[in-house]
Length: 205
Image 1 (cartoon, rainbow, N blue to C red):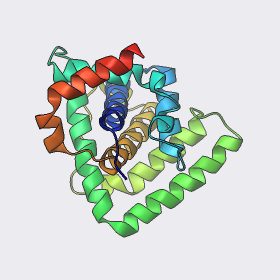
Image 2 (image 1 turned 90 degrees about the horizontal axis):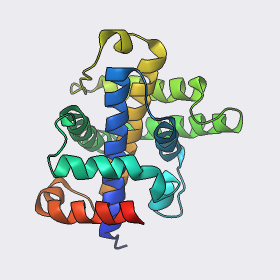
Image 3 (image 1 turned 135 degrees about the vertical axis):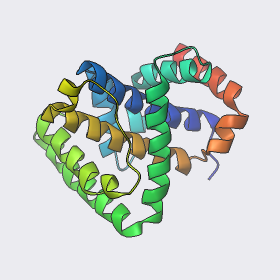
């Protein structure tokens, strides 16, 4: 099945939005609740009708699309950590995909976590904690770990750490989607300007 370039850009924006949330949580101790909810929705959406519906709709990726443009145009001096988190997500997605037994565990536990939304809202601390434990028990056991930079007081708060881990997992879910719709690091390098223009167009629609 052939996927559109727009689908790849939406998946990139998903990774970037998750990375920006990690950065905000680590440095400010807070994050945009709508973006947090969007990324939790994306993490638990296991049967989407199309790529856009993974994120509810493209309007829910506004901040991710805007940050993608800033990063690729190198206009944001504050985005270096966000970019580093995204690159880490892409790397861990490759490791996870090659580790079939871990992939099955992650998929199974996400399905279990999804059952909780019948009783709690997406950003309830129980669901966030469940998603965080999936990340801690699986992806964080690889030798490579994403090192999060931030303020010590925010990196020591349990609820905040859970949100950070949940967003890292959600970002890796977007990285899986990006691969599924034909994304690659080489394409980002070759088509950087095209990605910028596509993201700008999506922001206008």
